Length: 109
Picture 1: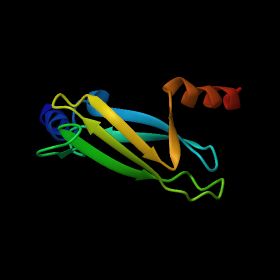
Picture 2: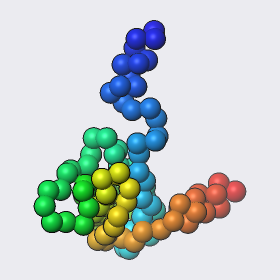
Picture 3: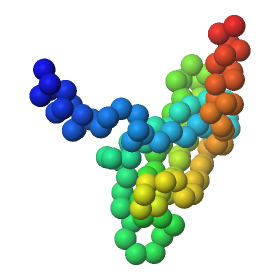
Picture 4: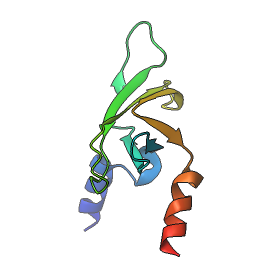
């Protein structure tokens, strides 16, 4: 049992410490989404000139419940320590975690 747990930690990371999250809102339907980036497996190294040492681009779609199928494209740049340096978005806007959670709390009440 201990061997399998160590093997899972080796390949899967140790939980959420290697995950970066960005919260976004679609400009068309206003749906809020979470963009999740695994810092161990999804970053692309940048060689030469650039904003950071690593780069990732993600396209995200909403749930489709609002019949909005606009793709939100997020570009993130990270330094050598995998800390966020800059971010860009097309088709949406960045929001804070508090803004993302606010409507979820209101709709649950």
